[in-house]
Length: 334
Ligand SMILES: [Zn+2]
View 1 (cartoon, protein in one colour):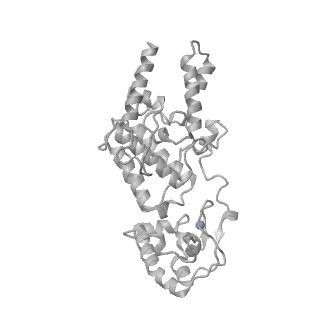
View 2 (cartoon, rainbow, N blue to C red):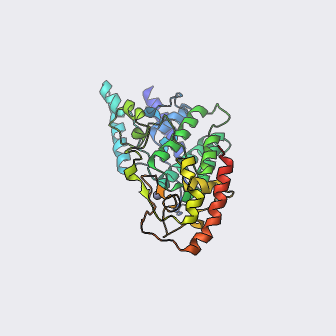
View 3 (cartoon, rainbow, N blue to C red):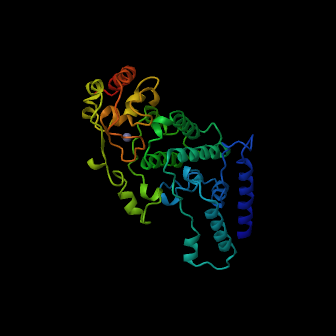
């Protein structure tokens, strides 16, 4: 009976590998590759897509979930399959063996670019298993597309933001499990379109990112403010904001304490790209240059306190920012 089960899983796995094989030009560097694990084959075989409706960290990598397709190194993968092999061959298992055989979610990517790759794999997996008509798949696709189109807005996302985005997709996938006709990701799509990503309150960040000591309860508790927190010592302040911008945006942070330039620029239709409003050197942080302060501890843009801006550059950029700011205020009137 047990052998029959193993054979079925092997067959499902082979079939999945077949349908997930990259199509078209195999030499293209953009080819999406999804590795089929025994767990995935088993869940597909049992149609356990929402994985028993469980939305906790421990099983978030089971069923149809973005955490199913987290990339791990080849060496990790082969050591895992050796371990699984040993367990399969064992004739007697102690509870400890069984616990060791349980798999754990892999740490998720912390950078925008890697998160995008993960989402491409997830979409590829959804395409193969539930098809393009699935509403959850459509929403995940729209959100990913939006984020790829506006890399300049999202490449600054913190690891916490990325975890939150993935967690929201996971929760939606659990709700979905082929029964729920409509995805709840519409709200996420509109926040992504506005360029302002909010944090999911119940997301177990330290566990997802692999920073945890393994105690799930402590990880859930610390999903509040970012590690290290946003303290005044991490603020990057710029004292030479051009007068025109001080006049325009002087009260922006008083009215909207967490506001960032990406959010303001996203309010214009169409959203204004970073390159059209950059002040100072290439790669200069726009929050720093225009709002006078960058509040993101993980911001990778430049914060050079001695940057000077030419008047003609200010004049060129100013009307664009003004337009975006007016649009922002109009939609966020208090
Ligand atoms: Zn910055």
